[in-house]
Image 1 (tube, helix red, strand yellow):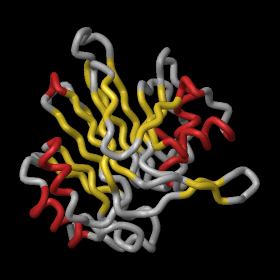
Image 2 (cartoon, one colour; image 1 turned 180 degrees about the horizontal axis):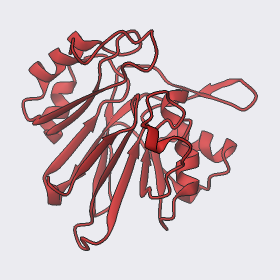
Image 3 (tube, one colour; image 1 turned 180 degrees about the vertical axis):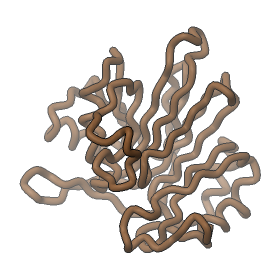
Image 4 (cartoon, one colour; image 1 turned 45 degrees about the horizontal axis):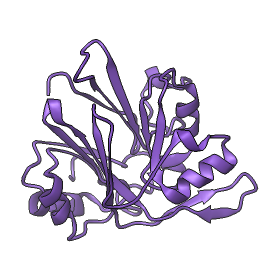
Length: 229
């Protein structure tokens, strides 16, 4: 996985970059749940909307996972950049963020979309979801989800769990896709805490080689810590 770079952008956000399998000079970039206003965003990223996205993945509609997705999409210099999320959030982005239907990739849990240079599968998550309208009203955010990003030429299968509790169907995610890189929330209160995340790793993901905790330390309410995990 020497050509794979995964950068934590604070909270639940990540930038995943790797070389294209057919042209190593081309960098492919996937953003997942990147929230550019989070207080843990690295200093070198503050005040900058990245312009290199190929894909922008959104696990659910809560602002701390979805709010920056339209800006990242619009800033991208890539020709075929898309937001990947559930059907309801795609419609929300199209209606309120002036995003065309061709810029959204609607999918649902259990489905996969293959781009050739990577494949994205949507998994279940045990959480909630909603979208905030400009009026302040709350709209349907569909069902919360996670993603497995498959990068076959690097033998990488990255599982971003989204916001979730530990749940037994994680065993099916392992059986179907055998993720070898885990991005798991540990903050507690709104997701599983360190104990739940540790149980998930030990019981359900024997294929994992690398584990990166997320969704912790952003606010005082998120009491889970890296040390406890």
